Amino acid sequence: MSTQHGVFGTGAVDSSKSERNTREPKRGWSLSLDSWAVLLAVGLAILVRLGVFKHIPW
Amino acid sequence: MADAVTHPQARTGAQPSFQFARLLPGIALLAVIGYAGKVLEQNINRYARTHHYTIPNIEYVLWAILLGLLLSNTIGVPQIFRAGVATYEFWLKVGIVLLGSRFLLGDIAKLGGVSLALVAIEITGAIAFMTFLGRAFKLKPKLTSLLAVGSAVCGVSAIIAAKGAIEADDEDSSFSIAAILALGALALFTFPLIGHALHLSDRAYGLWAGLAVDNTAEATAAGALYSEAAAKLAVLVKSTRNATIGFVVLAYAIYWASQGQAKAVGNKAAFLWQKFPKFVLGFLFISLVATYGVFDKEQITSLANLSRWAFLLTFAGVGLRTNFREMRKQGLRPFVVGAIGEIVIAAFTLALVVGASKYFGW
Image 1 (cartoon, rainbow over the protein chains, first blue to last red):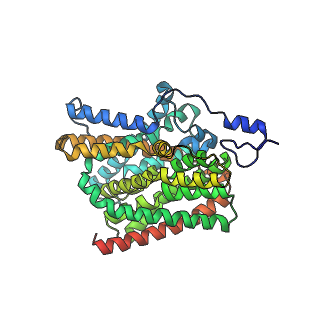
Image 2: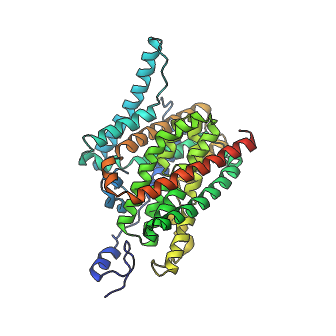
Image 3: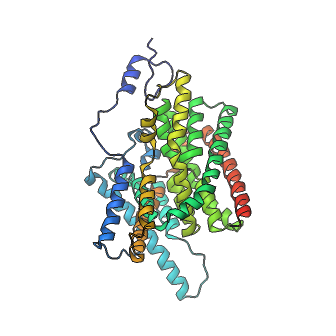
């Protein structure tokens, strides 16, 4: 029995489960959710500073 | 996020896709529910003033959450809206970064010393107590680790980060997330009541909410339900807790690797950077820029209002993603452990904050 550890598994797991769990989707270069949030917020702050948005009401 | 409760396995994807068209219906739903909350608050207040009634002011925050809860727990959130509703954490982070314009770095530094000490005490105490409780209730060790990380640091985000690092089961993380979310929902309604009953100042209450409420969205909402000043402080303290996420998860990853039950951590600096919540840096950056007078008064008001619009979407999402039926399905034992732990941590942090407020004369 294989004793590989899956990404989501603990202890000894069978090989099919291990294969399923250790396979991670290939991603290209991408920003995290946090980074996108920071970029959007900083972009909005720049637009406010430049006077594109003169007054944001509430 | 919504899917965390209705489809726990979907959490493993961690980030909502940025296929914008797919997100639009859900974002529109967040906006409609959030705005409905704002309109309800305004109209009820206007009606009370016109008819000379004295009624407690129920903030848009609570209306937005209640409307979301009502929809989620009656007809449910249709599939077409779910991806967009799951962006509520994104709007939370946008709102927090923009909120940085209301903080001068000096204020953060002044408050930082006290809040940092309280955060360190809270994290150490919460991890120790949750570990003890997990062992006493004979929970699986990794489930105990997830609950400890979730209650000590940062709710759902910390659980997701720790899950990958310590190679915990999907089931364990679903249990932990459900427990933390259910208890966060309870905190929304109980914390303001306790705060008012004890006549806590905005500062003391904000500190307490930031220390004791685990998920950032709920901590922000619990603060906003008390006052705007309390919300600002709750966000600051909660962000301080968030900033420690990498260190705590790294410690757990090293522990479980030493037990032969997780992969060893290679580059520790890269690990810390990967886990570090970048929105905390964004918050500090905007705060730095505001401190140096880059924005005038009108612009700071505009940025604060933008932050409130972003939070409006977040609060609607908090209600929409909370489905009590799905939470019940996750089982009772982790919830009981989480509940006991959270009550003790809330009492412990309340004692800390009351002690600090007496000592510092807040």
